[in-house]
Length: 152
Image (cartoon, rainbow, N blue to C red):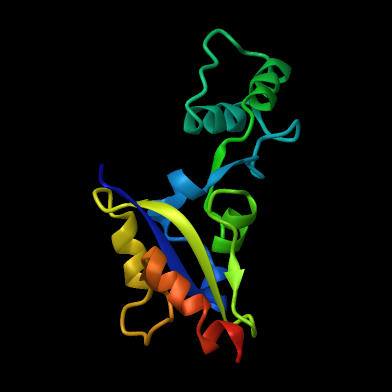
């Protein structure tokens, strides 16, 4: 009930920057931890990493067996993408760029209840329209048909 499909007109620099962290669960994904232990780590270091990743190794004492647990852990780090990455990963509607590439409009469903919409709105604080503006469908259509997007 507290989710709203909205359009966001982002400046190119914002579109290419990381999304607000509050959006990570919705727009982000898991990636491999580049700090995963390898055979060059000590058993204690491997256990510390497993503890931090909340992976049980009860009864496992051999280094090789601990490393199997590390390898089986899969992607383990939350990745917060740029708006562009989220759009191309299919987590937002297809981006619509202005004629000069200065603005990009994306569509998404954002929650007012959890603060997602507030975080997005804050991106445009103290900026002139249409810089980082949250738009309704009608407002987005009007903007796309304006000189800002058509260049005409």
